[in-house]
Length: 474
Image (cartoon, rainbow, N blue to C red):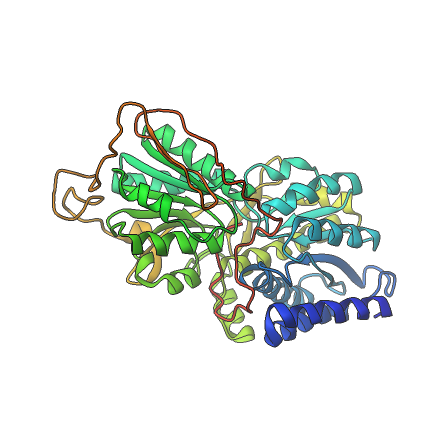
């Protein structure tokens, strides 16, 4: 390890100690020591293949995403090196993207300069929006294990993703939940400054339109907001039967908890992508009845999944989460492509990846579409008795009041209507977002708060995640 990398590690570890505490620094040490970070050219191929690894090791994305992603990559690396590539091993050159788009770009350029044939990681849609175009210029395979805003792999012929995108997951969430609940009126809230949340909201809206479901209010906020009382009060005063949320982890949890505190009844279900077991535990009763969609479920019988769950628990002393599972699958998919390419040439690896079809992974039988987007079946879950369980296995109430206030059988709304039904009502959210309670097709005002959002879109906490439950969306 050369002096410059030692200096960089010392600086990052110092930052981690300030941001995530000493336990976070210990995990950071483990991450940056993985494979002893050999220099390019230390060994001749095919003895070793150096892969770039970019995850958030500091900043708001470290605990909910970065550490978990790394654990998944690390477990897959150890298994692959012991059995999958013969005499060839995979090692990582790890970079911290600091949970920002700028950090992601800097990390990527550093790895490209070191000559890696492929880079894995990248948690956030805002990051791949910047990095994927660089992949086309550099002609280096860039494989995001977690980001899921729709359509991003089309930005480069060298771009691939393991997480099912919002245009795959969200229609499944809407059609699956609507088939059982039969709701007719929906309120929606989303982060207007975050790329993932915008994509999620658009795909939920399109699916609702296809089913003819009425959207009675669209409410917005900005990344980093903490008070959602204006939006949630408007939602409570509408006749919405469900609330659909598109947000990153931090804001998502606050919206769900504050909604119940304000008085939105449990009969108004939360429907949202990527609610994790850790968030369910943190939310307690506020999560009960919520319906979500995910790429991975610990109880699934997909190929190798139960062995992964057990091995992860044995190695790390915690339960796996979707971000670990998707990262684990990412490295297996990449290793398969390298083996089929029989080369460390990035273009050869890209061409082999593009041919991936029905490859057995913990996510299920995995394929790429023509643009490099993941193609496999999403899983719809619900929270029952404080635990995530398959939505299809949960029986719905026999009476007609599944969405209402619990006192009638014919009325499925359970809410009250807004006072203005002639031209729509608009509530100006001065706390950082815009609330639109439009029940008649009227026009809405823009957000006059002037709030800003920085590049850190993780919405997660900065302490080390020891629960293994994962957090939120990206």
